[in-house]
Image (cartoon, rainbow, N blue to C red; front, top):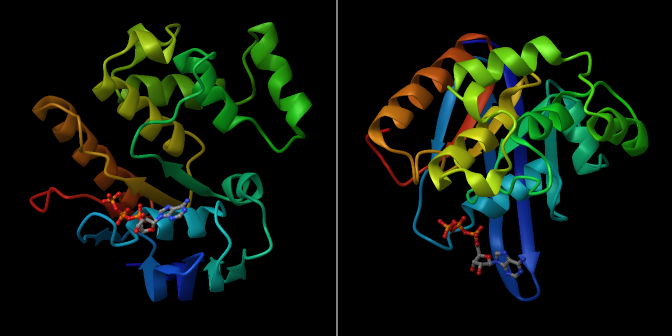
Length: 210
Ligand code: ATP
């Protein structure tokens, strides 16, 4: 295994009087896959929200030795933090390909970022997008909207979107839920591959076999 890539120190998140995440320390090395398990409501998703910058927290979070605490979610994403959501959470008005395009666009402000999507042009990350679509068997659905896909496929798109920019930290929230056997085998293989490239993977799942 490599160096510590994701370093969470004493992370605490409170919602009003509720301590959803209480003094959590997690270190994930490059090439390592760490599983986060616990009952519903234990605070697993909230920890991912803190790491990806969607909720305020106390404590400190470092990626490759750099503190990211002051960075907004999109800045964290651009600096190599990829995340998938429990309920896919795709952009409904964009096609599958455009959902990946948004996540793979080079550093830019939001308007520049949206431009190529509106024009239907392909960005610099075109090859990476095609390769990722192929890896997940999503080529045929590239020009469909999320609502036209099964929930399982929407999950795959969400995971593909998290991985398309070759992140150094990958956060996956129950990736296996809603996938059939064939899709979950494929995904397992893919998660192993991404760790094999040196990424630090933190994954929540209730399927302990996985
Ligand atoms: P699950 O397996 O059901 O996804 P979890 O371990 O991911 O559960 P969280 O979703 O992180 O748990 O929730 C932790 C606690 O924080 C729960 O008690 C939940 O009700 C509460 N909580 C989560 N999000 C919010 C929010 N935005 N505002 C207030 N309370 C919240």
